[in-house]
Length: 297
Image (tube, rainbow, N blue to C red; front, side, top):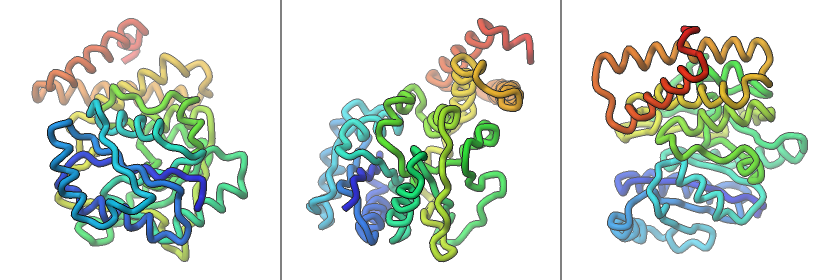
């Protein structure tokens, strides 16, 4: 077994069949992590029903697999932060409950990292499946390598399900921002790429090491008004890191701030934001006014 804690988060009983498939894809790997932590983001009232369903599957009692409830039901950022605190090993791997690993994913990725001790993290390409049919990955979302911060401002290009990363890095960077109920991965990877490069693991016999599944179930990336969360992240980058960015990165950051602020204002004109989103919008606007960014748009 490798000194890796594999982390899965889940948030609904309806996804249990998907979760079982995700766990089995880890257990079917040619090398195994030392533990699999499943953190369920459910209320105290709903969690017993979830356990009742999950206990019907034999892997509930598998020695490597442990289930926990995220006591504060904070969303994916809080669930991942809680799991990281529980993790006992130096390296962390993540898998969303609706995704899968290739059977040699961990073996190839571990060896890739051992040959590159200067790297803090690596990710992989993904095979996209929608309703079990292969979907072509859009060019703009293709995985990169190095410190591709400019491209990362535009799109989230690092899939959590493909990651192998040193645990200490999360504490250095500050973990996931629990204020973000979506796009918490976009926010984290911007902060990561400002400081560190990331490696891209080659495909395994021409097959992507990670399988991304989608279908009739809800995914966080489908969250309404997700651009408000991304805008919040961009303002954070401006406040905390603008002066250490190079000229091209600064230029792209400013472009994205202007573009996304225009988008969320158009959205706000069409329909009323729910209270949490509206409060976030007001915080963004106040920050932009204080930072004199509104005059630049």
